[in-house]
Image 1: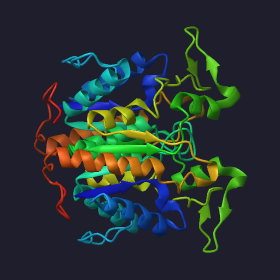
Image 2: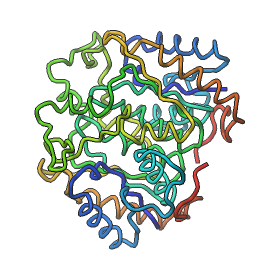
Image 3: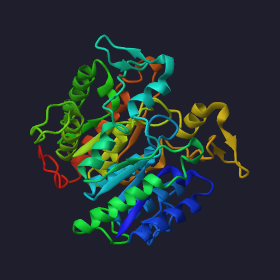
Length: 203
Length: 203
């Protein structure tokens, strides 16, 4: 069974080392980890710009996998990396299991208020809003409710770990718990249509 | 044809007015706009927490629509609202057209560098990275390449407009161009499986 390893670690200079470590943990649990930077089985056709070839390769990887584990650790703000969030939604739309983890245990509402700082203000009803009048979502969740909800709806788990700042992008404790949950999930349910088919065509 | 109107305007105190204005523009072009806060045709079953009922209602809305227009105006940072980004990916996974707009013409790379400020630094190869050593993506795009790529792969458009800061969440110039593009797109292609079916079940 193939697991797409979504996350912003692709932006690290030593992304290859992270990829190898994540794949080794997957292998220990009988799964094949697919990292975004892996060479696709079928190179995108045509004369597309580099960025769009990267997109097409990532989408093809996701379509070839049976499940997705997203690194939803807050990225340059209160929320997860937007590329990772897009991929989480894409896999949910394909109807396959999605799981997520975050290397912080702070909740989304408190992280947002911390980022807004003194610009946050109270509405008459007591809810917090930002300087543009947009409410601060606060359901005691890990991130925006669509992320937590997609994982729950798909039968996945959202694991968190309190990790020292210097290890935020490298600690794999919560990731490992996701891999174990994915292995259980995929053992207990039949493969989804389209899964385990490298290079499955897009519609 | 039904269009899901994804965007963070749900966080505004006057979200209902924005919803009405967007729906009126859709109607002028023969389309039915569906806003996230619309009451779902079928209430989610069971005794779920409020936040998860909201998730299920939004997912059901998206599954009932033929296309999606996402407001990808930068939200509390260089990127779009993560809930909106998730919904964009979800609709792409369902195989239906996605379109996006942003009320800024500044590119993602320059917005990211502006947000990082003095913490940004150069790698030996000249690329920018943040204080955690994560590279700044810069492909001269509107946002993370997965967002621009998903819209392009789906045959959509990514419209932008230079809008004064005070009108950032209310100007509908770029949105209107998306609606016109969606109307053309849906006229030129057959309805996708699952579209125009209110309350379509999730898998």
